[in-house]
Image 1 (cartoon, helix red, strand yellow):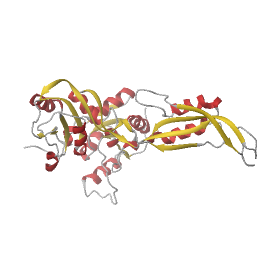
Image 2 (spheres, rainbow, N blue to C red):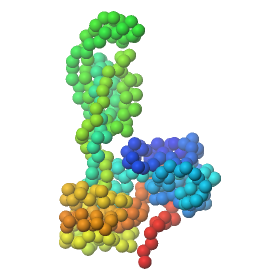
Image 3 (cartoon, rainbow, N blue to C red):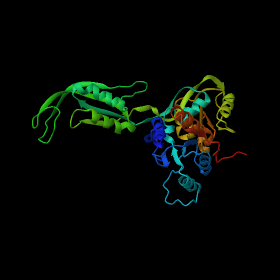
Image 4 (cartoon, rainbow, N blue to C red):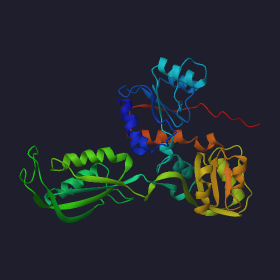
Length: 365
């Protein structure tokens, strides 16, 4: 039997919590990580009805996309659905875990699931993020270089796209004078030493900074480890918002819109003028995606499939791309399937359930 921490650790290997946006509240919202998991219910949202469904299925863990708590709660007395949901979960010992914008921001996450549903190929991040890569520079005696490099690699440094163990090493001379309290691995106290050293440079994602620095200190032979970290301007091609890909063959725009309605189980699509007869390059963003419109245009997308566009934001397409607003729930509803697929590959002895409850608060007449 697995514990909740094993489930959440596995999900966070796919979508690390540090990758969530500043406003978000992803992670374990109720429950204790040391609790044994009896069963898991996957859903888009967590509401009172979802908690009741989990209880009926004997599931003590709900894994959802949207956090039930976004802002701090000063009181929990059941005056709204958020507080009532939390009360119901706590009373019945049901843990709630949310993987939200951190799942949106990774390859294989929310937006890649949408691309899969639409049958897109050559899918990549639409708007890769900047300032989340770090460069680590440290100085090591040559005989310890390989051991240090291997330790850094195991901790997550040196991964660039499809390449691992990436590093750059140059030779030089290091100098230091140990004081009388030091315990130098090389040299003598109170004596200026000059020794051959290798300068090691590796790149790492910011969310792995702690474990990489821990690995460096554990593997480095010196009592005091000299290193520095710098934030890079480089974009991280595997982390960012939205996704973009291509249809195997161009499609007439009306046929593509029909394809979207069928593939995404959509009742209606709000869209801009159909300024293109045939489409093939498709950008997508689950949930509120208007902030990515200019990225879709810059990437020469024919259609941008997303949700929550406001009236005036439709004008911003300016005939350069077709905006297809399919609705917030509709764009993200298959995230629960993604959770199920990920967890079922690893945990085969836990009851896994997809919610049968439609949490969409919007109805169409």
